[in-house]
Image (cartoon, rainbow, N blue to C red; front, side, top):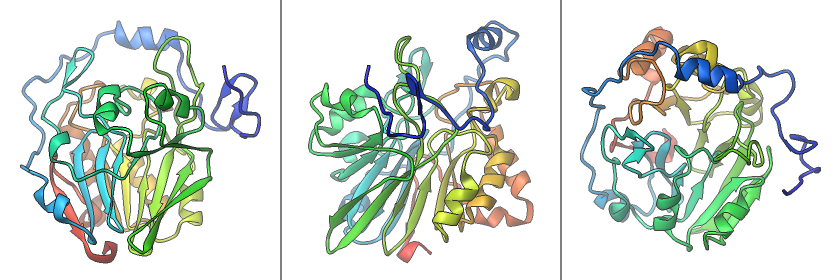
Length: 318
């Protein structure tokens, strides 16, 4: 077991959220939820989906773009770099099948320069997906997670603590990746609980500023992120996997809280993610975007609701 006494989030033998944030539910609550009276899975749901063969993305060398591939996997293009978030191209999560194929297949992606990983949960870090991306990619990951990549032959990896950053220079410009706090936890098995950190990323250059939250509850540090990084062009925020609230609220925001977070961030556009791909929780699959629009009210035009596979092209992030 590694130790990280230099990190403010390391306490005795594991990482922790700040003490004043809501406490996560325990194993008894997991069993209560899993063994309780749960709604049937919606096997008829089909998410919004558009065809994308990746040809325009592969040809792009300068324009800012964001593409929803599914769940928390998005492709951001900035300063000629192609950046993936939380890569998961798997057809299933254990027994839970994907509702639609990835919006852009692995084989149709442009060459990927960097991958950011918010935390090590399997729906956000799929082993087969990163192995397919290969060793030439730069992986930017939370403190404590680099060893997982190195063991798999992926040695171009940078670990970051909260508020630490790494800059990649390319095509005469620079993209800075800052790891920022999120209200969540980590673990892939029974013996690695909170042995690596979790968080989100601010990804920015002179052209545009993106915020990618990863998984998070509320209130987290949205207001502080907004203060440190004013004028975020695109806030990539989760809106699904929120029910039941008594269980999910410390770790996953719901659509109304996504609107609160968006306001605290001071961002221009809200890009919904983390819904409609895997049925991981109890809310109806089609409900999250509906509740998001209701919560946004008269500001709903600021929602940039992408279909799986859809690309938004943005000159200078506007």
